Image (cartoon, rainbow, N blue to C red):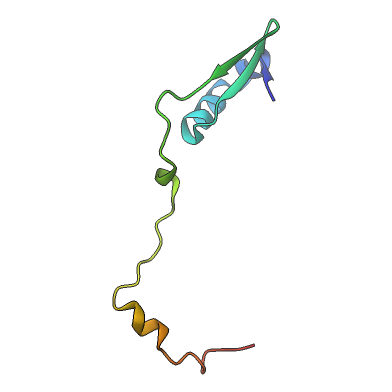
Length: 73
């Protein structure tokens, strides 16, 4: 949904920051025309990925571990 030029004027920095961070274009209505604010260099989807802990070791050791004492139905 496009915002009005007045709303853009009131929130210009928030809108620009949001477009820069997310890469999602913002549409603005101005005298019957729809304009877009877009980030020229979109971020990679992987750039937003959270870093997760890595298991170091042999994955087969996890499969063959006895988990019965930790299991609670």
